[in-house]
Length: 259
Ligand SMILES: [Zn+2]
Image (cartoon, rainbow, N blue to C red; front, side, top):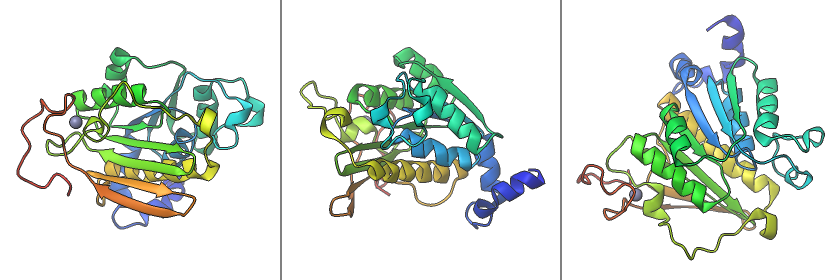
């Protein structure tokens, strides 16, 4: 690390648990961020600022006026630009020392496997169940840790699925895929702008912890927030031994999966 890097990351390096070693891990890390909207904006911004060496930002949408109330990577001037490209521009303006790859595409299963295989960690910042489950399947198959967030109206949720471990649940264990799930979309129901910032920031914090190898990850716990009352709750959940996505992994160990 040169002098400029030591200065740029000084406030992280000063943290005992992170230090030079943790910062070097961040610089060497590659993270796939699925979605450059409300959650992806703050999450990606903090990871770029923290010096995560390579960010792959995937989104097939373009920036619209109605996004700007909460999707803080984007600007009025970039309305009509692809979100992935707009996000790349914003991230490199924060930190030109990192590599940012913008993918203007909807990721199918095969493409996800390819991209997840190249990543040390995945942030699910998308807005629909089909993509969430597809991202989870790829992360389970390749044993890549997944940090998943969601937000609608005033309620947000975030959890970490460290799929390198045998004893932890996957996203499907907690939210089984069902045909009859009513999907709420921000476009029709609304969402409080700073709520996506709160959830996206928790995702970034968990990603930094996992990459730097510090602290206690939010594994086997679902953290929920209701912004209207500003109450935060964490509930513990376990691996579903009958889960069709992760159930074929090694048998559950006797250890408590919700550490
Ligand atoms: Zn599972």
